[in-house]
Image: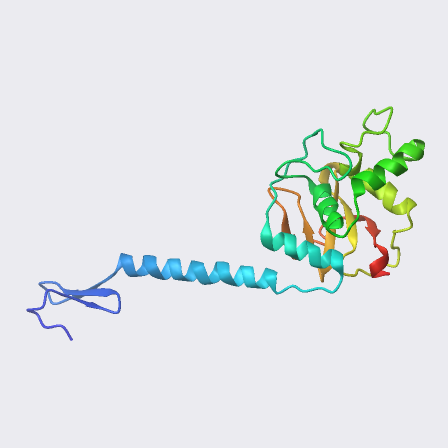
Length: 219
């Protein structure tokens, strides 16, 4: 207890002082609370990292997705770039399709080359919504409708509604924009729809699913 001749006392981060009328005033120590906030933030961020890193898959596409998500973040950039061929990649960031392209490339699949080869031989079977009169290896594989056409033509389409880690999923977003990502588990996907690439829980059925594909390892 504070006596009247005591002016102030720090106790557990609280400043206790006695006014002339004998009333006890308590004031929080701002430095202590700042430290507590910093410590809480550290443990929160650390728990988020552990949660993401704790995802483990035997499927190579899903496993590559987690490795990428744990090591790098790509900002969203759907701009047109002239890139090398084959195995070309856009600088720095990328769009939703670039997430799938890079993950599959880690599994020995070069969608740039595969799509270009197929669209060159069967140009009339691919969408014509961009006004192109011939294939363009810089951008064809970076367009969701082209990837949907390619996956379906190659027999990768899944129609039973069952999702497995590593499956490729396409959605119809607001305004008719198409989106693509990689399914991991439950409702969780690895994708990039801005501002950057990420593993996101609860996304799978957030928008209408318009395409579902699976490479042979999952079949």
